[in-house]
Image (cartoon, rainbow, N blue to C red; front, side, top):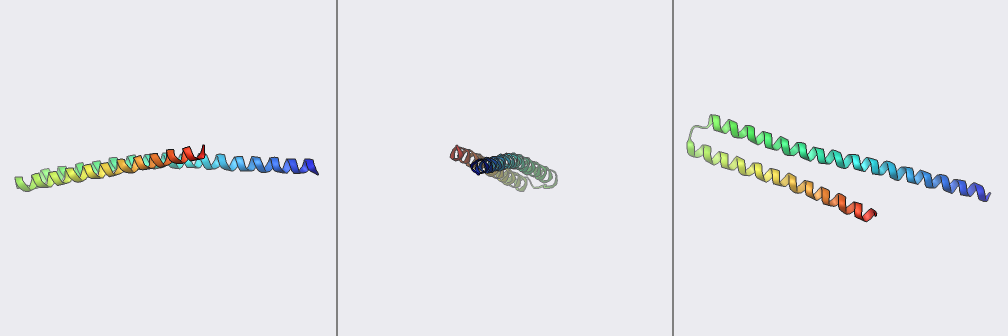
Length: 103
């Protein structure tokens, strides 16, 4: 009977370890997906603003309005890029913090 309990405990331990490994693999994949998604988002934002800049440059005839619009678009582009960078840093910090807690 004692030997049967030992095997059951051993089996439970293996099962728990397997679940932890699967959870970590899944978490690492999710983290990598999130990083890639944020990078793609930043590139998409940049491309969209660049396209908007080209449209304004080629369609707005009034020099003063064109310059104001270009400045506004550039400011928005930088703010959005900064926002995504801050989000990436926060995610990275949270991941590192969680890794430290687990250790």
